[in-house]
Every structure is written in C-alpha cells, then in structure tokens.
Length: 231
Image 1: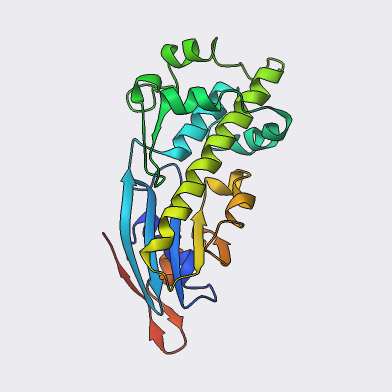
Image 2 (image 1 turned 180 degrees about the vertical axis):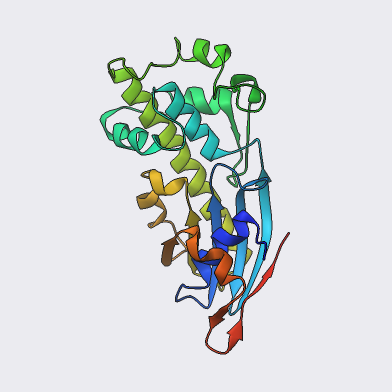
C-alpha cells in the first residue's frame, strides 16, 4: 500500500476526528513534492484539492532560520520556537520583503536566491548572510538578542501565513466550520494559538501522521471504508 505523504497527514487528521465535514490544512518541510496542501473531508471521503510544491516551503523557511541561528535542522526547530517569545520581530519586514512573496490568500513563493538547500549542502547562502548582517551562528557561540529577534521574526511570518491560509479556506464551503490541521512543522512552532481564534472556524483538531496510511485503507467510520482522492 502506498499513500502520499500529505494524503497520510490529512487522513490522520480527518478520519479519527469527530468531524463529519472539515477542511484539512497540511504544512511541513516537504512530502514527495507537496509542502502545503488543502483537502476536504466529508463522511468517509477525503479529497486533496490544492498544493504548493517544493522548493517553496514554509517548513524549509523555518528550518533555514533554525540553521542560521545555530541549531540542527529537523531537530532544533523547537529551540527557535522557544527563543521567539524573548525577541522582537524586527526582521519580519525584511523576511517578507526579500525572502517570501506572500499573497493575500496565504499562497507564497520563496526567493531561492537566498537559500542553498536545493543545490548545496547548507540551508542558506552568502546572500542570506549579507541580508541579516553576518554568517550563521556556530552552535558553540553565545546566543544574543539578535538571534532571539530572528526567531521572533520567522515565528511572526509563519503565523501570518497560517492565518491568511485559514481565512482563505473559509469560502471553500460555507457549511464547513471545522478545521483539521495535519501539522509536522507547525507542531514545533507557537503558531498553534492564533489559528484557534480565526473565524469562521469554530472547531479544531490537531494530529500526526502515524495513523495516516492505515486510515486510508481501514474503516474510518463504523460500517464505512475510507476513500481518498488525490489532486
């Protein structure tokens, strides 16, 4: 049995949830190619409707700042999250002006001129260093207020993207008032609180991918079989 990465995330969020209807938002570093995807769940059916593909990824943007602030990618993102409340998001305009082309509906593209993860061995490059006034922090170096401000800034940008996405999802189906968020990258960030207050969604559910592949093949509701449709 093969299930795509984001399908599995979405299935793990929707099928075990108490919701009969829900919009499912999945964001992470990258699946096969998808980095952000939207699905619609109804009853025992799940349909993936929209995707943003690699290399444009908010998860990888967050990991780039994890690397730049001196932490290990794919494990140190929670440390960036922990630093964020101690900083001021003074670099957020710089990120939005130079690194991320963010649209009103939350869709985005990264400016790959500042990143090295597609073709090199680092997350960021010399142009990124110049933009933020110096090289990436070595793990042994002392953390400074600048690093805390960088963490706060990428956190603010991440939250803004998620808020725009969730607001744009509301018109997809006015009957749907539930939002399932299948999140791996976002589990490590403090974006979790703002979207809980985002109208018109009144109910939320968070979960992880472990049940996803199984949920696409086993009964998802009593007497019903799960049905998953891709893009």
